[in-house]
Image 1 (spheres, rainbow, N blue to C red):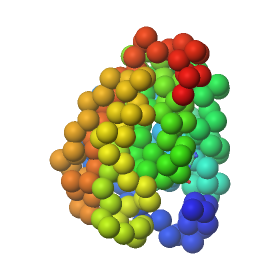
Image 2: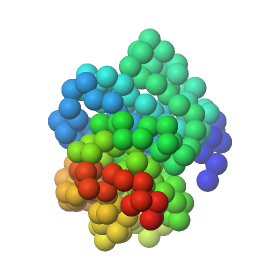
Image 3: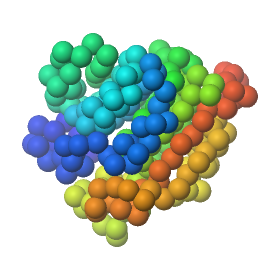
Length: 206
Ligand SMILES: C[S@@+](CC[C@H](N)C(=O)[O-])C[C@H]1O[C@@H](n2cnc3c(N)ncnc32)[C@H](O)[C@@H]1O
């Protein structure tokens, strides 16, 4: 998937122009003054909603230069938002245990399935003990790879447990809010970083 080309072509059916209703519902999980990372943040619709929680800093990662230039323009006057061009999966060493909240929305389902252990490990690496990974995890596309339905790779509750439970306690339920075509097809997830797995040895064992 050439994400940058999709943004250049304005072929971005996942971008609804507003925050995910699931993320909006989860906003109270975000403490005020938090340092927040949004992986695969696209054009920043969720970041816009997150700003209502008066964060200290919101770092938006995206691998597509076109998405980052959109973010730079959109939040030019807001020093709280830091758009970063790059691979979220590489940011672990830079943010080690320093982040309060990671907000996931259609990034986990967009990376190749083989990279999911690295995604979980990166979230675990950057979150402080007790920090939270909250989000909407897309789980059940219809029997199609039609991108207007949603991003490419589905998941399951069992898979979320497999990848994340070594680092997090999980509260996973089927979201009762959502964009109409995704309703009933997303998990609303709150994960809390366990303090007992915050050592290099366990992180290396992935
Ligand atoms: C389906 S889009 C969702 C964008 C945004 N979350 C939204 O809902 O509008 C997936 C996004 O993840 C970005 N992406 C894919 N792999 C990435 C990676 N390894 N690191 C950072 N961003 C990535 C893509 O460029 C794209 O913007």
